[in-house]
Image (cartoon, rainbow over all chains, first blue to last red; front, top):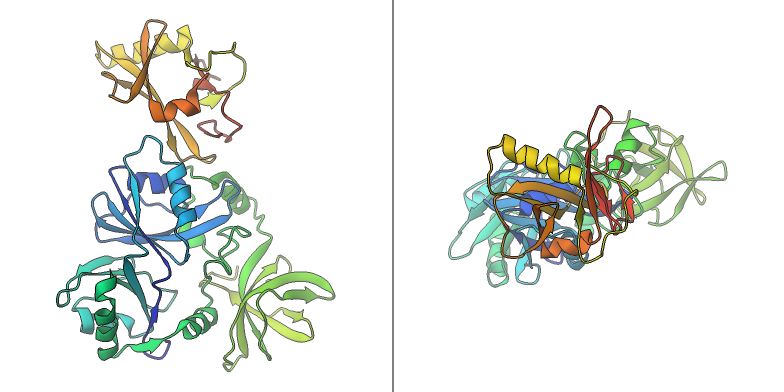
Length: 312
Length: 120
């Protein structure tokens, strides 16, 4: 994935059509990021948080056309997201339609992803853009949402066109890849994932999703808690990239001098020059880069914050 | 706007507008040159606690609005929002320390710090 570009089948993820005059405004009021400035052809990630400021799901909000949104989530169950939005849809003109079962989604990731997408589809959307193309008879949507320093495009089509779209990508030079390669790549690049790092046990600031949080847009569900954590520097743990000399296990506890210092949330199985990569939440007092922790008998080095976040 | 808890019990099939709040609505309507008007009271998703109060002076009710007469003022409440507002009192407090329009909502289990948002 990280050499040139690979394509991973992400069809099991969530795709929801959110339509209506009030759809964007409603999402703006329910989630962490500023969304009102989004125009047709643009996309932006945001976080649905609970009233405790915990993560329910990270959404990529793409504007297909005025009052027509496409919501993407890594979650393989669209229902909690739809139920949450529906619960707060009262007088708004906004409807939800689950497109997860009728569409396919392929993630194209890698340094050459944008160039290869241009070769295959004739266009190359910039980061934070949504585009619609019709290669042959297929109707394809492309949503670009880069990882920090790594281009990533989600290619979405109807199920009937999915095989042709996949074949077109592979013939265009994109390397077919599987879930294992996807997770190895994201762990190595410090990218949190739904259900592993992004769960209702953690808040967006802990998860390194601070760029997805607007501190100036006003209220949204969970805003008071998140604003307080930021204002008073109350973060108690941070998602960090880790390295060790033997592979770690997700769920394993991290310790320092016999005391709990964090937990491993995702672990890679392929070694690089610095060791085996992993991601984990590390408690305050232990998250300084270079800190040595223990996971059982294995020494673990705390590298840098995940998701491209600054160490300070 | 904020939520307070110092008003007499309001029938659960209605909402109550105090004379002061009704007069303030009339003042705003007069300032805007509105002759025929009513007060829309509703709830929408959002705010720190999940639900936000909506107040608006409008020319008339929508087809799905419940219409309530209070202090000579027509109050329009969308039927979908009424379940969150039944039994609510709307008051107005002015002056330097006044909070403007204030809701006393028996359905609100929790309100956010600034009082514009609540959960049920």
